[in-house]
Image 1 (cartoon, rainbow, N blue to C red):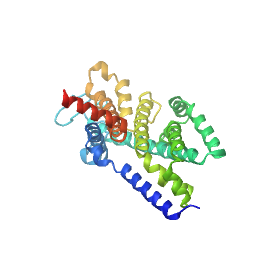
Image 2: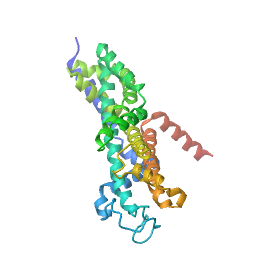
Image 3: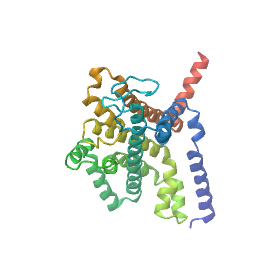
Length: 310
């Protein structure tokens, strides 16, 4: 016979461990890499959110003198068609981030649900979900998007978001499944199972809180991949080039010979923004890994100790 009181105590103790593992935000903010990454990402998020406030010029208006260098009226100059580059940059930031965050979030949700359910349930369901995962693992994402864009031009960003998500969730699902396989037999999960918890509660209430750092890491890489995919597709002219984004800015700059004419203010801002935004997400991921990975924390403590003894 199982002592219900003992089971409840074990489950309560395990739940407290879970809570201690999930409350890591102050430690993340104390990490220099994570803080720098958060500042970079927040900057671009604020630029996108405050686009109507930061500029009152439509990004598609062609009433200015073409190829003006940065000046007081046009902080980032004008394009070869007489458009304001600052206005295009601001509104392009919003468009690119919408694709990045939406596609990254959707891919992460698919990876969490499929990977964790597959690893915990096992049996026929696991075999079926693993077959589905393996099929999507071997599908090349960018070539598929290129083929789809060739035959079905994207009239809006949402078809692109869905396709990016559908071609980028499988790797995350495989990683999460492997982690669940190692955790489903742990004592606190067994205690919750004996206490009568449903399968969904065991997966998403008991196991999932211990994997937030891994899930968040999957989200960050999903956002980076989505932003790069959208920019690459726009740059080669297979996206909706009438939608102003970082990628479409690079497309029009390249097609109008901005590099040859020395109009650096046309292509450097979107290219630099992609690099800085991706770098910011990578810094957040590195900082989160340093905070949540016990081996890295121990290595940093040893390094600091050696530095003090030197």
